[in-house]
Each structure stands twice: as C-alpha cells, then as structure tokens.
Amino acid sequence: MQYCPKCRISIRGNKACCPLCQGPLTGEPGQGAFPVTQQNIESKLSLFFKIITFLLILIEISLAAVNYLTGRSLPGVSLAMLIAPVVWADLRVATYFRNNVIKMLTMEFYIVMLICLIADLRTGFHGWSVAWVIPSVFVFMAILTVTLGMIVKLTLETYIIYLFFIVLLSLFQMIPLALGVNPFPIPAVLCMAALVVFGSGGVIFRSRELLSASRKWFSL
Image (cartoon, rainbow, N blue to C red; front, side):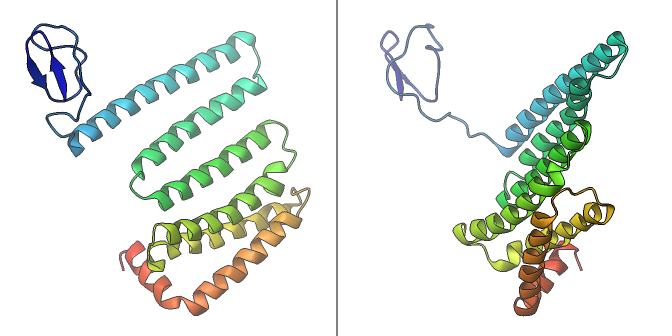
C-alpha cells in the first residue's frame, strides 16, 4: 500500500502522487480500489480497435495516394495494401478468441497461411507458400492442438473438431497440385497423407467424441 508522509495517509491502488497534496508517495502500489469489470475491458478493446481501424484506413489511403502520384502500382506498396487489412483481422481474431487458446491459435495460423499466399502471389508466385509454408503449418497446427489439449488438460471432445477441420482443409492442397503450380509437391503430399491417416484414426477410434463435438459445433 502506498503512503503519503506529508498527509500521513495510506492510499490504495497505484497512484502517481498523493490525491490530496499532489506530493510524492512511498511504499509499493497495490491493486485498485475498484475491480476492473468485463464491461470496462470490452470498452477499452472497442476503443483500441477504433484506433487500429483508423490507422489502417490512414495507411490504405496514404499508400493509394503514393500509387496514384507515382502513376504506377508499386509492388511493395500494393502488397502492404493487401496485408494491412489481414493484420487488422489478425488482431481482431486474437482478441475475440482470447479466452479460447486453441481456437485463437487455429485462426492465427490460417491467417499466417493467407498472408504467405498473398505475399507469394504479389511477388511473382514462386510457389514457396504452397510448397513449404502451408504443408508445414497444417502439420504444426495438428501437433500443437493435441499438445495444448494435453497441457491444458482439455477433454478430447473439446478440441477434436479443430483437428477434423485441419485434416479437411489440408486437402485443399490438392488444388495447386492439380493445377501444376506447386513446384515441389512432396511436402504437400506427405502432409495430406499423414493428416488423412491421423484423421481416419480419429474417426474410427474416437467417433463418439467427434459426433458429440460436431453436434455442439453445429448446434444439432
């Protein structure tokens, strides 16, 4: 608790100076006299995103002006204009799902894959995103989801649906393979094969948990 030697009073919370005499305080600051309510937290988050949204709009307008004044679309500027909204969405997702670590990280990884794909497309598409990044991220997502579930001691029913979607969405890697735009298909093929085997095991041996999680997820 803080103390004002001049006024000889103890002060709760964390004050920069004495509220009576404005003099310096001694002692260690403590918790505030009034608890921070959920409403206060939501209000601060709302203000935070209003500021972020305004800054991103400012950035987008500034970059568009640069493109207009130079008379051509600069590669770096155009890429920044595409990534800025994705960064905003990333921050929004991280805050919205802050109470569900697995869901938050899952959405974060999907956004990372999207950013890498956009960057690859905007720099001439050399295929590194579909050849290396996306397969690696899918495998890492599956491992991390299981690991976090075990560390936090969640029931399998709580996070098995996330594993199911990881397996399902990883199959979209067949599109770049079919189009012939994946310059090195081995990681993608191994990723899909491993996750399909993993998912098949889950469906066969953990069908009850998967069915229960699906009912809750889709509100059936």
